[in-house]
Image (cartoon, rainbow, N blue to C red; front, side, top):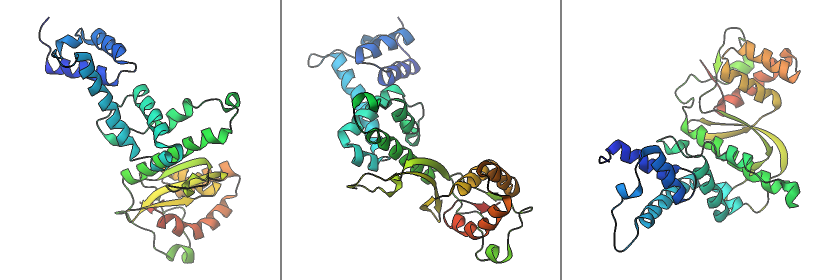
Length: 278
């Protein structure tokens, strides 16, 4: 067999590093994909077997990614404990290998992974909240990461206070937009009140949150259902009138009442980086 090219070497090593399974299973997979075996790449040594050398490198790859994930989920680590977090993060990386060069994308599907792999609490005779809270924390912390990552409203036209509350809003001709960084999430627990070293579990309460930035500072705002639906509508439609119509239909609140409430709430929404004028 010809000497493997750089591209073939990289492809083989990628299979060994990210394929799900133990080292033997990874090597079988890599050979089936490339036609090359471990002996084609790893030199033999009198001190350590090639499989051991490769195993160290493969394990180190996963460990480094787990360390990267820790930076994004500090509250979750504090709640679960570092050992439990490492176990779940390791399983996540092995089950859903990263396909992006950007480490920001590494933990994107972690909340979903925790949700899909959670055990059945009724079969374990434990409080289901103990299983659900880590999922909620992961969802919240991932949303915070995305709010910090994407473009905010810092360079956009801001709404002047108190012009709108005093003179009203031109609902027909004023177009509002939400910044890309705005994250709207629905939670079953008030995990946003947790801090590292929190001693008490979060209160179980349906909570709607807007997580965004204002003047480069993260802002977290609890929302009423109509506010949540309005911002969600504005994320896909910059027409304020159409967004109000959509919000009214979903909440059964009259349009006139939403418009009246918006006059006083719009400044709050702006100061929390939720909206700006296009």
